[in-house]
Structure formats: structure tokens, C-alpha cells
Image 1 (cartoon, helix red, strand yellow):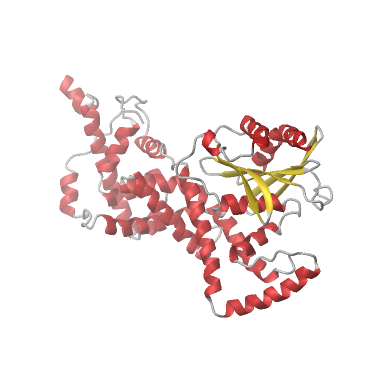
Image 2 (spheres, rainbow over the protein chains, first blue to last red):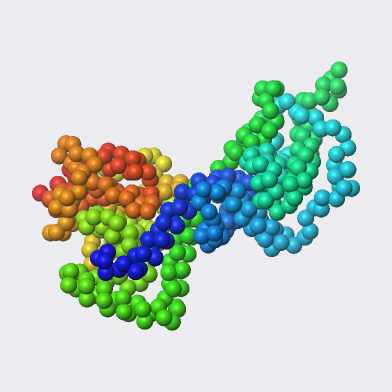
Length: 194
Length: 257
């Protein structure tokens, strides 16, 4: 039987190899992509749709992926491409711009780092950060990509990533400090008690 | 993720806490299954699109003609003529003659969507309502040994290429698993295929095979072939069959007597 179908089996064999490689290289990153998509989009259902689309796009262009290179970074690049595409489709309003005025107004005082917070508090604070800053924080601080990789994923210069990251971290800590204060924790609360 | 007031060691790095909070979320169990099904559909569509090219039917006719002649000479009757069949033929050609029926049924019933994972998991009674009563013991054996994350979503009798199968379909958060039983053909025997069993004990030899992501473990009785086909790891698949084998054999031997 093998001999009779050699032509078809050869092309099918290539497809099989591609499938096996895709399974090995791409599927293990599903959880990482999903949780990042949830944090970026703020909606688990949309995150599911986008992650499905990411894998579909990745499959279609998998022949361009070089085995041994960073598949996770490649998938994240596709993820952000899909997220931008879907944002345009779903929201149809301009995203918050990274203007200096906005940044100045957001960074009035050095951020307090709260000592005790729950996961829910941290995620809620993260969700309040503007999207571009949140993406930088997620990629570098959570997913532990190098600045260069994050810049490549986001399609921005490395300096922009560093700037967004720095500002994102500060905003996050400010939000966390506010939450801690509302629990009666942190520096402000201590000052009030004394 | 609790809504209780915060309580963690004060010296903990905020970045670590952030990572821990974000990484606490995992993809829903059905997502990998949906993605794999979607990719399987794309592969099928892609294969179908190939047939739309004008030169392909001509080339295919030539191949089919030549292949038909050769197959006729080598005693085969069935000729795979559509892309899905070609793909499955390629997969089947990687495993032994006796291993093929189980893989074939798993591919067409579970993987290619003959009877796909339902959006809503049925209750067990509903899932097994089409199982012929004489195979209830087989079902019980599977239920006793299957890891608890698996759920049976269908147990039924199906027909593939004129051959009857009893097919128990199971799924976990990201994997598909089939327990398949079929009558043994006169020319089907792992011993005759000269396959060396992976495990042999208590009168039961277990045979293994693998193609692409599909792991197979199988046993034979006088009249039946039983298979476990899944996308688990090789060891997990073998362990599962090893655990179930004595009871599957017993259930099948009762049917033989």
C-alpha cells in the first residue's frame, strides 16, 4: 500500500512532520498566550477567540518559522497583531495615547509599593493601566521576555518598551498603593494611624 | 485569587507577586481541543483545495489508475480517493496491519469529526445509551481504570468501511482518547504481524504503535481486537491499557464463550 500511494504519502508525510513540529513547538505556549490575552483584552471569551486565531495564523505561516528559534516570542508577535486587529474591529475608538501630558498627570508622586495584596487586587490594578503600558509590563515582568524581544513583539523601538515599562510599573504600584490604603495598609494608612 | 484582605510576606518582590497573580489563570480545558479541531479542519480544507486545481484531477486519475492496478495485484480492494482518506491512509501506513482498524476508527470518528466532542458534556447515562448491552462490562472496566480527569462523552457502535466497532470516546481538558473493540479478521493478529509485545503478563500481551501524535496500545483475544488510541504520552497510554487489559480481556472472553 505504501508503494502505491508514494506521491500522496510524501506530501502527506511532510504535512505530518509539520503537524508534529507545530504540536511540539507551539501548543505548549497556549496557557501563556491565553492569560496574556485575557489581561490585555479584559474578556476571557474574546481572549479565547483571539488565541484560536493566533494558532490558526501560526499554523498557516508555520512554514516560515525556523525550528530552534523562539517560538513563544513568534506566537506573542502574532497575538499582538491579532489583538490590534480585533481592537479596531470591536471597540472602534482610539486607544489611550502615550502623550507626555497624560504621563505627567499619572506620575505625580513616587509610587508606594504595598506590602500585602491578593492576586485579585493585583490583577485589578494591572487592568487599570493603559493598554500599551500593560502590554510592556506583561511581556517583560510577567512573561520575562528580554527588552529586545518585547520590542520586536510590539513592533516598537526598544527605548519605547523601556519607557512604557517604567511608566507601567509606576502606575501599577500607585494603583496597588491605593488598594492597600483602602484596606488600611501601607504608608498612608500608617501615617493616618499615628 | 481571593477577595480577602491581603496577607503575604512583606519582603516578597512585587514582580514575583505580579507573575504569580497573572500566571494563576490557565486556559479553559476545552480551548486546546477546539484549537486542534480547528487546525484539523483547516488541514482538511487545504487538502480539499488542492483538488480544485485543474491539473490535479488529471494527475490524480493517473495515480489512481496506476495505484489501482498495483493494489488490485496486491489484493487490496479499498482505494482512498479523497484527501481525508489519503491523509488517513498515510497515517495508517505507519502502523501494522492489525493496528490499523483501531486507528482508522479513532481518526474518522473522534479526530475528523464523525462524532466530535460536544459543546455540552452529556451525563454518563446519556453518553452510553447507544452502547450495545453486551459491552456493559467493557464500559465498567474502562470506568474503573480511567484517570478521573477523563469523561466519557459517547459510547456507541459505529461502522467504518463496512466493519463494526464498539467505540468509547473520552476527553480530558486537552486530550482525546478512544477505547475501541472490533471483531478480529482472519488475517489479523499481532503475533502474525511479528510485532513484539511491549508488555506481557497474566496471559495478556500488549502491543504498541505511534504515528504523529497518536499513541496506540492494543491487545487481541480469540475473536476480538481491543485498542486504546489517544494523544496522551506513550507511557500514559501504555499504563492505561495495562491497567484495563485484564478486565477488557475477561469481558471479551465472556462474549466469546
